Amino acid sequence: MNIYKEVKHLRPFLHILEPFDNFPVIYDANNVVLSMPPIINGDHSKITLNTKNVFIDVTGTDLTKSKIVLNTVIAAFSEYCEEQYTVEPVRVVYNQNE
Image (cartoon, rainbow, N blue to C red):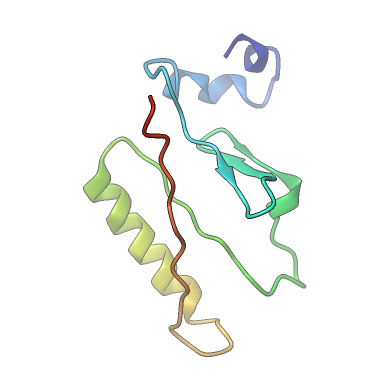
């Protein structure tokens, strides 16, 4: 966590993670870090005008509220899919050793 305290644009958000011993990191199938929510979203996953596939993630401390937000964002984005209102599920892997 101390590493991030030196990064000016991250500093205002670090208090969100301080109470936790662990926090999420999202990788793609090639083990590239896509995001360390809610702090960092990588260049690898930026949306551009040429983007064809969008991965939507929501993290939070309240699972019910997080699911509501996720479903709302997915519904809004899916309107613009090539085949409207379609989405693809993903497999979520949790580290069970911690």
